Amino acid sequence: MTAITPDEVAHLARLARLDLAPDELSRLSGQLDVILTAVAAVSEVAAADVPPTSHPLPLANVDRPDEVGACLSQADALAGAPAAEDGRFRVPRILGEEA
Amino acid sequence: MSLTRTSADGLASAMAAGEVSAVEVTRAHLDRIEAVEPAVHAFLHVDAEGALRAAADVDARRAAGEPLGVLAGVPVAVKDVLTTRDMPTTCGSRILEGWVPPYDSTVVQRLRDAGLVLLGKTNMDEFAMGSSTENSAFGPTGNPWDTSRIPGGSGGGSAAAVAAFEAPLAIGTDTGGSIRQPAAVTGTVGVKPTYGGVSRYGLVAFSSSLDQAGPATRTVLDAALLHAVIAGHDPRDSTSIDAVVPEVVAAARAGAEPDGVRGLRVGVVTELGGEGYQPGVQARFAEAVELLAGLGADVVELSCPSFAYALPAYYLIAPSECSSNLARFDAMRYGLRVGDDGTRSAEEVMAMTRGAGFGAEVKRRIMIGTYALSSGYYDAYYGQAQKVRTLIARDVTTAFDQVDVLVSPTTPTTAFALGERVDDPLAMYKADLCTIPANLAGIGAASFPAGLADEDGLPVGLHVMAPALADDRLYRVGAALEAALTRTWGGPLSPPELEVPA
Image (tube, rainbow over all chains, first blue to last red; front, top):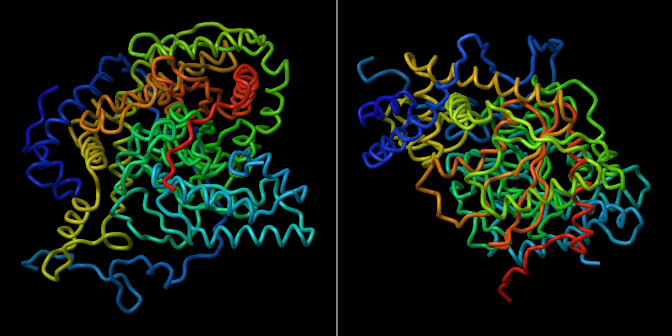
């Protein structure tokens, strides 16, 4: 596998919505390289005709009756909010500067 | 009788017989916590008031002649990854510091319904990612056998609390070994039930297809009693198994009988041993297997060739699932928010918050997962890991056609020193070499005390795996081993008395 560059690490961090400091970026690029090289061992296994397993239980379409049950009150739902206003979550602007 | 050294089963009997009250039992454990926490740091939060109130309630109900659960009045510590509506739930992370969930997890609800007394929340690697509890944002936990060493992880707090006699019972969660590896290195019992055996509702998700909650205790019977309380179908978890819970308590009692494991077919997994395993670990493991053979078990060696690829497959699957699951920590609805100064956008606040709120290991795993799931790499990494997972499950199925249980050491070494592996993620990951296959296959597995390694005097665990939904076999083997070894030792092994400041 090819070495992972600090630029690629920065790109991944943007995808993952992680603000990383420059020293974190450089440390991570070294570590990710080592880890990804090690886990690439899975490619040694000849498994072209093997189906993937995403889950240990053979479950499909677990349903329940569509009935009204107990749910959180508005106050409970908002109790842990970093900011709330008028019974709603208050969030920073979601549109870009130019909008 | 020392209340803190008594088993949960013993405490339950004493309370039922009116020899001691739940309040006395709870107070004894709270006193012990106060005395040893400066050295151990197993807890992130202790709810002394709530515990005493719950204990008084049990005493009142008992006095009124109400029917009570078997473990009513027995204290329990809960890993800080399970939601509690009256205590903070931090997952060992700054991003959830101080967060009090608006609901109880099903496991916690069942503990309360059964009358158990919740002492508090135990320390853990952040979001259950780690094998040493050093990834907790709130400082590491010390191993009661030697507080300069790791208690294992991610559930080091639960294992240490039990080993240090701060609680007779604790709840852990296990994604790649986080109940079993801490049990091994602290000389305690840890059981990961079959996937789906215990509800994940309210268990903050790390890797949803692998996570499973289970008991951490000092005795095999106590683990079975706790298992019986928390297990069983829950409509709130769509992956919860709708089937009868295995007869774990009966198995724990039967296993301790003289013929407990006679005729049981035990398979020693070739791939999980040998080179890279500490001599003392190998020696105690070999002895445990010999002991089972001496009790009439039929021991064979067999190979699970795909297990060699379990570790790399796990370190693709778990980080991939974690990178998706931890996307919920977006600074909008609960938890930390950083940089919301009125000018920054939601996306900027999200990235700043996650950068500030997550620790190094969580960031590493999110990055690995993001990489493995990104277009162009998906098939080579995540897709291939899922195929390897199929091969591991097939190896397990084939093995269980020939034997009733599989055994190995729980972890290749005894407790290593705090700080020894923090800068070497791969070395840290190897602590889970033997425990990971059970998570990938979804089967039940457990670690039981097997004695101390000669070279360092630290605990070693015997790892047992059983087919899905046959968790009772784990208890049968564990109880047989426990009965035979405690006979040899003249009692259970206990850590040296902790240095308690006067």
